[in-house]
Image (cartoon, rainbow, N blue to C red):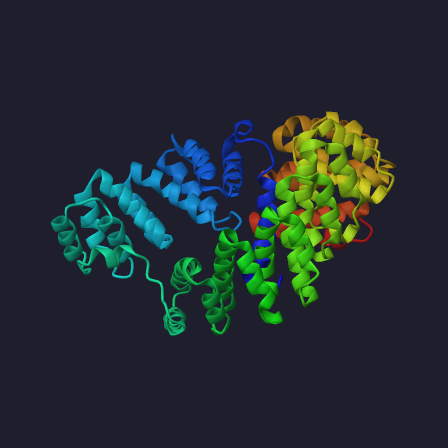
Length: 523
């Protein structure tokens, strides 16, 4: 169900991943944030050839530092079967730069066994002796992963036998090179019991994922049944179930669906999203029809989420919005930002109108991020649309979301002042001055000294008290405090100064003075 570990992660990740895959080309972006966005887009490509081509192009000239940063970023990508493939390709590049360092990095981060094999395979093509020497030094739990890669190389039989002997493995190369898949049901129980006895959570999860990947290719139905009966920590168990169902549904969606429909109702919610997403990608009408046949509302909810994700991939906006309306309100909240990003690519105005028409409870959590997607597409239009909102509360909320994204300056003051009466737009003016101060402290401070007295000026003065304290300029902050006229804003600013003289630059006399001002109802 949606509240459980991996299924929840899949739900959130699917929305982010699908939305990201449609948000512009990599060539349009620059800088570290652009690199992460590009990885998200590449990770969303299901076809291995289509996925790895742009990935190899992206990393072709990357140095070791950038590769290590990307590997760290991969951990924050939505969890799909392709995420591991992204890591594997990154490690290939890492190994080409510094194979020994790549091995150390993989061991320190407890990378997937396939990654360890990948690194040693790449190393062996350059320096077989060095690769074998390092493999011989590996811990016994990891050494077979390196041995598997080395023994699969096209080497003379005598040399392979020598390597196997040095690595402490059996010379039966065929056995070493094939993944171990348990045949009878009892073998699943034995393997799961062994995994459950591992005390280290990271190692337990690593072994569980390795087993799940192998079992998904052999007999997914038997593996799922064994895992359902397994008593283990929920996140590892759920991750195994998801991995097997995803692999199964991707290769044979109808067989996976038949198994689901014949299963006990309590088993359905955790796996339905994955199966229906894969089925809907190939036969949307059939997937939509099958939703109603599920025995529980929770299962139907998850199925609708999977179908919705597949529709997003197809890029049919009208059908996507219809499917969104059928989602549970809890799932709608997770899907809002992804829908807005897709709509904004085609029509920022349509995206804005749709976002602001949603029920407040649905749009609340994702509102700021969603508005950012629209603002990036057409800043001038977005600000005009904000100004035209009839609801004063929503108008100011949207304006605050826009100004807090940064890149504001003097030209935004007139826009802020056009949003209503001063009591309403005062916090927007405060945000403009705060953002302006961030890139032009002198200009913002000078403009604020000239700004007309009133609620907007007091809000901005309070904000710049905080900005100056963050810049370790308490004298400037105190001068701004003295100019504040509103009793409420004086108390707020006094609390900022009290914290500064208590926690940052201790000064007992000033701390006591501002403590009194922070609680003085007449100040």
